[in-house]
Image (tube, rainbow, N blue to C red; front, side, top):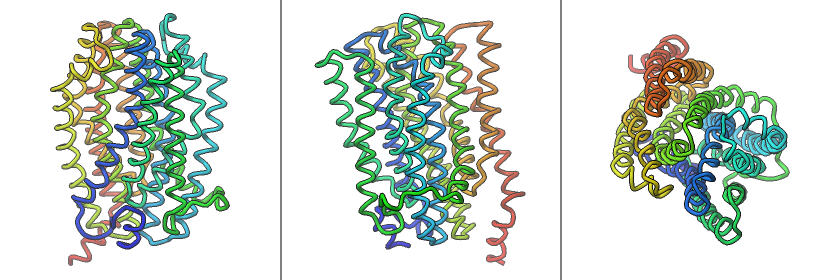
Length: 461
């Protein structure tokens, strides 16, 4: 297993130390998420500086909607991640290879379908977002161009999941870094040189995702046999697809739940005017860095648990949970503190208007001060998902996150429609969901997983 890990650029998840390996897995993954977010941040910054706050608001208004769509399929890619890690733990190379090719083909086909569907539904969907008429046309244009790139966007995420399932988070980071440089350059070229507006930055994002997808496929074609990509091997295995969907679809819905509730809150933000929209959009593009960090440890927990569950190692599964939780809490608190310390400087990158910066600072203070609570949600839901239990944590999030935020928006915020009041919905929903998630994890441990962990107790006896 150690030799295989080295060939794939990853490491042995089944033996040896745990803490350093989780860090080596999570930090590159967090950097990948942050870099991917910088695609959107670059979009917002370029149009904010060279086009105006209206274009900036149009791009920002798309954020929750595009996040909802991407979240569903990133969840499905987590299904691929878990299945590959599990079969790796079982040392079933043939099943790993079938999962690789099923995942890649399904991701591309889903992307094509989505690209077509959202060209047809773009206007009616955006009409539900309460986007001001002054920026609606630009928001629609950005959405159409972005959605046209769904095949390569999904392909990148599923190809990345294949590497993650083998313990390798560095290769996706390298590919994204290279394409990210291209993205920034194209942003400036399309907007400044060609005088395009929001469609220019959307096109730059799509092209950069195309580059990163191609790079990952090239690397996969040169990998060791179990995950080597070959065009002639592309096919959809129903049994593997069922496993991916069973684990990934609830995980995707968990991401969708976050995004749906954010759309409701974004619609409320949109009613407060362009300045609030611009400030909230800028803050979101900064504070989400902390989320990518804490989420990376959740994915690490899922991947390590899945591999050791497949290998039948309950003792390591115990240690993985504790270590992931401690490391995630420490890293998230440090990241949140740094972002708050430099909040004004970071916000000024997107827009220099004092009113916009003031709104952004308000949002960051409320969100980042309570980000550590979100760690409990990510780690414990990731822990359960690693054992193949994905539906329960998704339901908890649906009720806790979506239910609390939507109820809050139509009750408390409706009576006191200020930006400060609206932002309280985030930490409130996290607190409720985290409490229920921890209780659920304890119940799952004692009921569904009692037999698995009993093996450890028997071994010690």
